[in-house]
Length: 508
Image 1: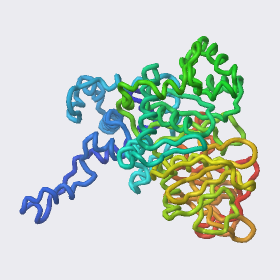
Image 2 (image 1 turned 180 degrees about the vertical axis):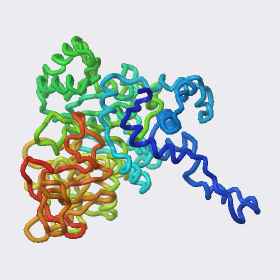
Image 3 (image 1 turned 45 degrees about the horizontal axis):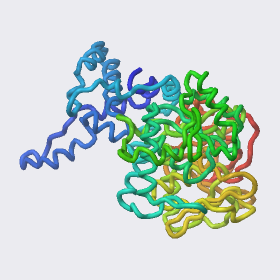
Image 4 (image 1 turned 90 degrees about the vertical axis):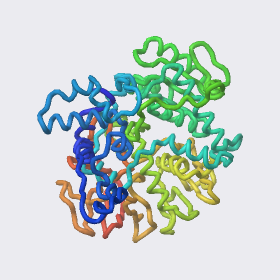
């Protein structure tokens, strides 16, 4: 289907768009006699909206709303000429300015189309998230624009070697985005990267999202064979690699692979100068000074896929990718933001006794990154500070400091479905106690999928706006009604989840 629309999108959004577009206007009482136009508008709130208004409310592109509305109306009223009329310009009633064929703005490769088809959000859940304000039209780069305008000279990112203000980060991201677009990166293209956590990784991530592309991060130590396998599996358009000092032959191997690949067109390495067939990330970030703010592709929307992560909740299949949209990532960060309204600590130790402190499990670094982007806090990369912690992030004086202890690197491009829907509240008895985050729900079921009463142990299932919106191999971890199956046994008391332990591989 055109404009990045899939059948699942029509199923998810069709009824909402149809209801919002109905031109029902109530006229009654004194506002009519007194010609109180503001009161009239208040009476028709959320009804009879135009397509651009609906797109803004739901986080879709205007063209997607128009197409879904036409398809829904055609199916409901059994009219077969909507598509033809739309292509002839019938949709002009909802357009401003010069008519342009929308398909010109929604050109996507095969991998991008398959990725969109894998997004699967039940209509009733999407409607609740929109109604409750948990999903909005905000895309992640929107926060970068906001902070660059409001606090241009405040520090956005810092490590042991350098710092970037919000204005500098904004300029660097848009320069890299302009370079990527000039080299052919399009909306929906997948970019694989094995950059270490730090300033350049964040810049690359944001630049890719500005282009409307999708970021797939892999561990920095990923070898050439594994990286090539992921590039092929994802149908990636580009690869961004760590420095040649760490993996001297990797870029050359991938450049040779690109010549034989049907999808890989661009190989970039975190070096200061380019070599044959391998572009320099540093040069690309510093280039395009004449026009550093090319901007993203037209029609970008918050429902677009933004981040692909290896699905932590699917232990049986390590090749499954979890798809995260701008809406799910922003919503996950918003739930964390609500928990640290004051300057409290974020810690990776589930045994922290203070209920006011948030505990992040290993792999929840994505929440920290998006929390900093959403709130405008400084994100500081630090050396390990506590040997007993897997992931440490502290929040104080408007600065989020993140470190990784022990062997391995900080992983901020990672998440897990427990942290996306659950907040640790301390200790009760002999296990950690959790509660659903804002907008999320939890339930305990038996081996047959039947909900259990308080105090009865069973399998934990979760549902929330911060979880992934689909899987590349289908909804293997979802129930029919959209709940996520986890690998945990737990008991529930009210809204508290207790004694969360690993369960057998069989998921209910």
